[in-house]
Picture 1 (cartoon, rainbow, N blue to C red):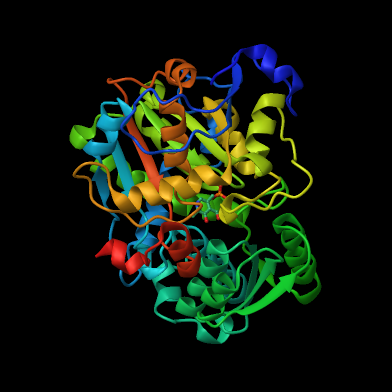
Picture 2: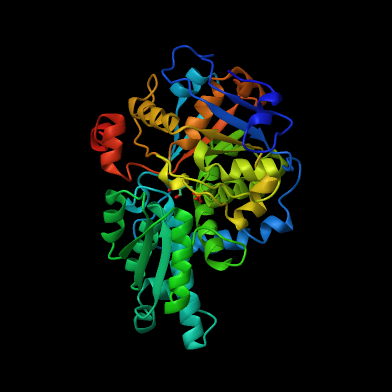
Length: 436
Ligand SMILES: Cc1ncc(COP(=O)(O)O)c(C=O)c1O
């Protein structure tokens, strides 16, 4: 049940004008979804009526998107992933439309991540070839065609990951022919480790959290002369994380092109780890629709709510302690400073969920509501949807976020069954059975 601002005073972050803690009341009785605690904070720093500005364009812009599209669409197997209408679930939630972008089949890697990590590997190799040949006109196709194999094979790329980003960097390294070393932290499951190694990368397990693994990747790269491909930026490392985020924007551009009659949605619920994905999507909608852009709501695990804390405090704020989550891709304690440039003015709200909400959303998608198709979605990929359902089932969150029959909501299902064993344990069926 929603409570007033006074409930926030005892919370771990500064209170906001409208801020509540709740467990959803079942305003729609037929939907089977557990009543779980959650928190919502409205971002007082958002500039809802502003045009996309220079500060944002310095991170993501039209030229960058065009270049990313040109590169990525030339990779073998590229095709836009589908935008699926879920009228059954929309009706159950009492909203107008629900569009679900299904990233579970992207390049066979089962997540949206190759758009970022592999693209940044290609851009890194272009820069390295340019530096070694003295040419400033290296075309991405030259890298894809193996045109500079003697230089490229001498390059080592590295990254820290909780699974999907490492898989993407390893996949890109194999496609372009360079060496790859991936750092994972203690909590990464063996299935995710094997999925990275399957692309020929050397995988090194490092004690501590995701953020510790990030620091280790940087330290080793500095010592060995390797290239780090981070999906997050501390404010000093800009180039590669910007390429990663720019690559993700291709996914957002696909969504916009697939929207019925090009009408902007009213809401997007976006799962956030370091925030690169959410920044890319928010930016692309903002660039395209200006002040008509949708309300953007970030969704995070309760124990790794670095965006919630940062937006609440009005400045980047790290979350300390154990940030591990079932939503492993979102288990980050520190935001990306590049994403902050977009999301500080761009995100309207942040919300936190318990891990159980993501499990429930995975089962609900596998089941399908009314005549909706059964969809396979992994634990991090489903968080935005879990956030929408949770908010729509709570009277106060519903009213505050204007979730009503006029709402047209976009959700990005950013992964399929990236950990097959985990999927089967949670859903009770294999992903293949569900997909069939
Ligand atoms: C499936 C999935 N969705 C969303 C995210 C969040 O992306 P970001 O860390 O850019 O916020 C991740 C990150 O690994 C992920 O694996």
